[in-house]
Length: 375
Image 1 (tube, rainbow, N blue to C red):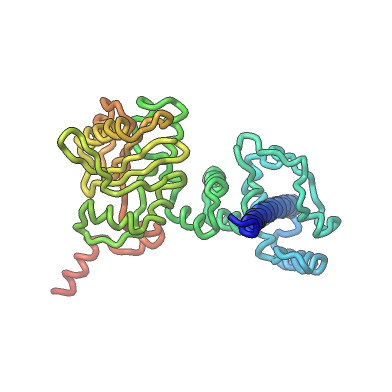
Image 2: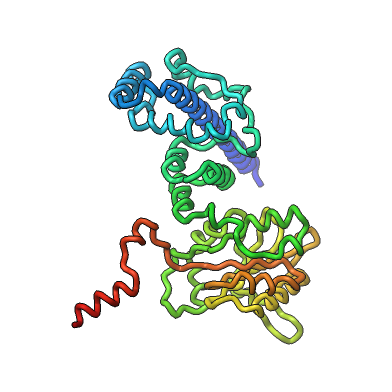
């Protein structure tokens, strides 16, 4: 290699390293500015809430406050009348869990603080992780908070989605989708034998990655679709499938071949979970759960552990996805299994909102009206 080529290569490596450093610094600065802004909104919300008497029956007062704040800080967005109401709601929503005392916030008077100070890149040293929470509620953008204030029913539900947003780096659109698909109610709800077959910490982590039911409404299938049809479309829509499975799943293959003696077997879907450090076998069934499904999965996991599992891998996990199940039947089927198995349902259609569902006629009402027309 010539000196000129070596120099060019070294320069490209240097440029790439500098680019990475700049991008990293930009990301950290953006996060710091966001945290300071949410911190400011928290204090504004507290001041508005503490002076509630000024707002009772006088919405024009809020409009005047918004007008005055925009005049004081013309280059700063977020002081519209509607946003001031969101800011107050933000404080009131989380105040019941004593977030303010937990994070040790300093009071900020926006009328005495410049815009530069209010959104300074450095986060105040007094900010700490909230007591009892393993995340910072000031780490997600304000737009995400607005979505949560509109859609989350409880503080616990909102805190769950904040954790997931931070962990998975969700955009506002993905956060909205996960709320609409009710991830909070589905996460960790599958029936498993993990507590009996895995170490305690591994069992807890594995339980949390499973949902019940899984929502495959992004598929377009005929009513009489078979397992292979579902498999094919799931792999064709692998990005949406991985989003529904959750963070950490790496796709290995569909109809993955295994050989035992003279016989060949195929796994419907094979994944590797990066955080759990184990293989995950998914068996798809477009029928109701049958006890023999658990025995077959136990067999698959034994083969995977013997043929694929490396020395530093954890025990492989099986997930049986079926159209529906009987809870007691599943519990009996898993009781004698030596391998970690979870059973969940999946749905192929998006559930209707309750308010829309209540306006639609039942089958009986529809038949009654149809008979009237025929008569």
